[in-house]
Image (cartoon, rainbow, N blue to C red; front, side, top):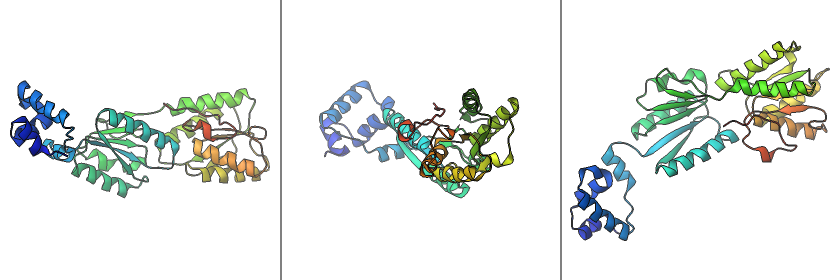
Amino acid sequence: NLGIREIAKLAGVSVATVSRVINAPEKTSETIRDRVNRVILENNYVPNMNAKNLFAGTSNAFALFIYDMENPYFTALIKEMGQVALRNKCSLLICDTESDPTLEAEYLRYCEAIHTRGIILTEGFIQSTAVFERSSQRLIGLDRSIDGHHTCIHSDNRKGIRLLMDYLFNLNHRTIAYAGNISGFRSCEERYSAFLSAIQDRGLDLPPEFIFEGALDATTGSRAMDYFCSLRNPPTAIVCANDLVAMGLCMRANQLGFGIPRDFSVVGFDGCMPGYAYPKLTTIRQD
């Protein structure tokens, strides 16, 4: 393959001129740009993007901080972001932080070192945002608040839970439990708070044993099923903090010989994998 020196020779210009056409075309004349670009196209020359980034003093990448790579919501998000990056001729850096403040800080230092264009900071433990607020990186929070001068995008978690509770109430459920509550996550806290409000607004009883704490994964759902079945008066419906919890609960119910929704009604939240649940899961589909 031809390099930049060969392109310069064929175009009758210097290597520096070819570099300017590629990296700072506004600093060259239209005649020179046309000549160099024609040679580039004729020879299928692909510029070295690393060199371009060094010239520009910035990276052509943006970073996406993910706390749970196994969660299908984030898998779908990565897929969408990858397509956006490709359309804009950028690269996407995936940072698997596991919601660990130490890991987040290390990834942040790396992003600052390579001069990424910015960071999309998905949900994580609320108390770990201080290190980002001191950063010079451009930040966008997704279901995670940073400080006042950064953009944050939030799902309407409260409305979603209200819709689910209306649905269950209209099915004549009056003993409704909750599975997958974990503190420190904005979306979890909003969903749980909305669940409590809906219970109170309808004047329903909520025994303390109807709340099952746990992480947002299928294991929590499986354990929740065992727990609710052990109660003397189990609930007739279970609201799950996300689809992974709901799927774990449904799979365990099937293993125990229970039918969904024959014996229990189960609802989830996210809507990222509608084709992977049997029976089909009732859930809130996030945008």
